[in-house]
Length: 325
Image 1 (cartoon, rainbow, N blue to C red):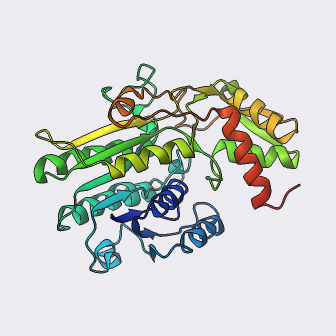
Image 2: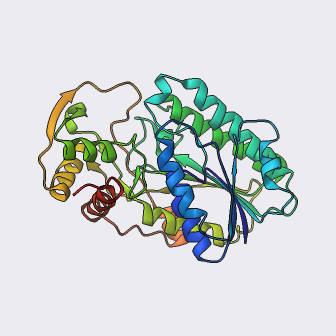
């Protein structure tokens, strides 16, 4: 299969590309490689990917007019895997325009590219658990209205889903949207709590803890996410209804509170955390909790890596990556 991947230098994009390349697929990946977090980490991911002869990379901004068609290089693609986005709940308070550009304009450009690409069978795109906000009954079902996102990031991801639904209905563009729940693991994102907490604990510095440590997240290990993505990519889209658009939760379906995360990192690092309880910024939800029955039924999705196993794997990688004892 010939796959066009956006966000190829990103955390989930990198791991998914490695898995798909290992299964004999060819990938053309695009990424802006911006400085939202250290670009050297993104370059390190790309360096691993570029060891594979089936991988081609184009550095470009998906929100720029004509960028995707130019990056395609005249090739025909069987599937588009759209994982590029401006990530992060809190950064949206500082620069909401970055989210409008990447998550709305960029998403629209991907839809247009897909709509006009001859022979394309399927568009798979990333959404987020942030669409659910605070008013959804846990565990969060894909049938929930999800019309009250707390963060601007969540609002842009929900808007992207609605744009996709519209394109599916108007043009028959077959699409699958994936609501990821707090994905973590090696080569992950430095802006996320598990990374920053590990870094600060190893340095013996205080870690800021919001909400008394009672915020709960459905931490999902990257290998479980990749297994689902590979299955979804390789499974032909089923006989479509009137609107060929479906949405799935991909989470561990086992939320943990922040104090539990800290305790797990303490055990993995052998160091005690210095906790600084403080008020959190706007945009953080109280809990994320995935109902994964739909993905389990359609793709056999069955996450199996608990936090107690995933965090030690991450800490081991973190020490190696930073040359720490």
